[in-house]
Structures are given as C-alpha cells and as structure tokens.
Image 1 (cartoon, rainbow, N blue to C red):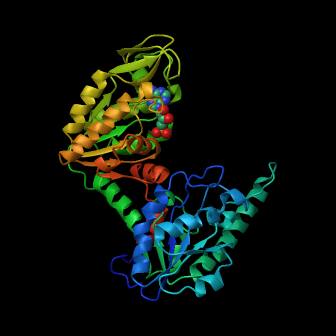
Image 2 (cartoon, protein in one colour):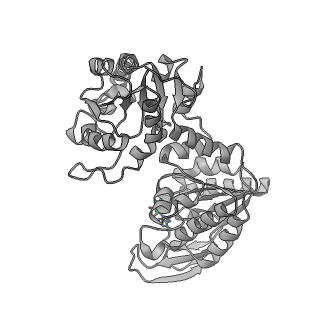
Length: 418
Ligand code: AMP
C-alpha cells in the first residue's frame, strides 16, 4: 500500500530516495544549473527532520560504462551544502552495505551513478554491431536476469522507498519502478513527484473549462501523440511554432522554406477533422514573422501564414496571431503550454514566445490554472523570468510529454500499484 510522506513515521528508518540529480556540469565539473538538486530538497530535508536517514540515488548523463566525467562525486559538496549536513559518498552503488548500515538518524549517503551498471536501465551493453537476433535476445535476457539482483541490493539498504525523480518517471528502470515492489507497505512519492502528478491531474482529469492547450516546438512527429490525446480533452487547441506549418500546408497554404513534415500531412488533417467533429477550436497562426535565412541577423518581414513567399521561412508568430491567442488564453480557466511558438533562442524571434509567457502570467493572475511542461517552453519561461508567475512549471521533459499523451508513467504506477 502506498504511504504518504507527511504521515509516514521516519524515526530510526533508512529511506532510499530516487532523485533526479542529472544536472549539467561544465568542463571543470562545476554545476551550471542546480535546479534539480534544489527541487529535491524538501523531500530529503523532511526525512532528516523526522529522524530518518537517507540513501540518495540518481543517474547522471548517459554513461555506457564507469566514466569519471559522469561520477556523482562531482556534486557531493554541493548536495551537502544544500542539505545542510555532510553527505557521505558510496563509490559503487552495489557495494554500499556497510555505509548504509552505519547511517544514523539525520545522516545521508549518496550512491554513485546508477547508470554505471547496465542493470539500472535493464538494457544490454557492448553488443557487437553484427550481433545476431539470437545474441541480442540472449543479452537482453541476461541483463534482465541480473537486474533482479541489482534491484534487490539497492532495496536491501533501506526500510522505505521514496520516488522523487519525476524526470525519469516515464522509465521502468530498477531505481524508478522495479525497486518499489520490495517495499509493498513502505513506498511513497516525494513532494516534487507529488506536485508534478497533481499538476498533470489538474489539467488532464480535473480541468476547469474553458481548457486551452498551446502546443509549439519544432516537429509534429515528436508531439503527434500529445495532439491526438489533447484534441479529445480541450476546448481550444493552439498549434504554433515550427510544427504549425505542417498544418498550414495541409490546409493548402504556401509556407515557403518553413519547417514542415510532408509525411505527417494526413495525421494533421485527421487532427483537424477530429477537432471539427468535437467542436474544438483549433487555432493556427494567421500571421508569421518570416526570415530569408535561419539566422538572428536575417532580413525579416511579417506576412499572412498561408502566403509565405518562396525563399522565406516562418520563424515566429506575428502580432495578429498573438492577439488572437491572447484572447483565447485570457478567456480560459485551465491552460497547458508545451513548446515555444517561435525560434525563441534567437532574440529576433523570441517575441511570440515571450508574449505567450506574458499571457499565461496574466491568466494566472486572473485565477486560471496554468501548467508549463516539457523542455524548451520551461527553459523559455525560466529565462524570461515568468517561472513564478504561472501555477506550475514541470521539471520533467519526456515524462511530462508522455503524461500528456495520456500514458501511465511506470514510476507513478509502481508507487500506486499493489
Ligand atoms: P520542441 O523540442 O519540439 O519543443 O522544439 C523546440 C524547438 O522548436 C526550439 O529549439 C525552437 O527554436 C524550435 N522552433 C520553434 N518554432 C520554430 C520555427 N518556426 N522554425 C524552426 N524551429 C522552430
């Protein structure tokens, strides 16, 4: 049975906590953005404050073997500083028995990068390029087999399990999902994970209407499942950014050199058809800021989105589009935003994305629930200083996308399930 972190008795217990400390490091192994570490602190501090001890585990990067540059030793000092207690370090996540056993209430131990072992992900490594299907299947079976012992070892260190790693909740890895079965009555979400799940439920299950989704970014292909799920749930679906041009082309518009995917035109038409059948207002950009090169210094003009001249490409939403979208957003009670509506990394084409961030901030101030989820839109609201002006900013890119596709996340199911 699932427990709750606020009511669980941590006194004298050892908690193994999966966090997402996959932080960016520079060439001197200094942390360049510690958001993920800071977001895990409420959970970690709660355990210590309640008289428990901590075994903290995470991955860092995508190592395929033990590699110094992916060692979590680089972050121990910073984690200690944030947590306010010296954090011990276990150089091998599978050989931490003695250190875990010696932990006293109020003490913390960080395990070395879980992905130094193939068993964490349960995917075979080092297969020859020309491996046969039989060899691949045998390697997969072997790693799945040894994954059980790997998971059991991690579980043996602790009395209870907390998952606070939303960023990896869409993966059924040893530390994010499989380990939960060793703690049938002592497993729970951390505060960050709980916040993310509540935010998703607020939009996908309990949305106050009108409900508007703004989906931008580069490609339809990466967000097709998101669009297909949302079109059945929202009142307004705003499609902007690079992906919008596939829809505009599907409508017969001239899009010049704009980013588009011809092979996805049938799917775009299908989404349009479904929106029409369900009475969903599908709003594409009507006016576009186009450039004669994919560059911040390119020549620019503003044209109707369906009449982009040859040699020019759509880079940002034009004023007329932004005006229409603002009206929709300010009339909504629930708003989900994923993906920039222009090439916001270039200052000349960041205006549309900045305006959407402003619209969400204004809608939030007027009482709407606003969730910003998924990689680049999160970077955009954070860079532009709007992160604390919306209701919730998700920490999980891939996990948030899968959640809004309507999939059950393995990390969530493992805690909720029997
Ligand atoms: P995604 O990862 O799918 O959310 O896409 C984010 C990326 O989409 C950002 O790097 C933006 O620069 C890019 N993007 C947004 N609008 C456009 C556009 N009109 N043309 C090309 N790329 C775009």
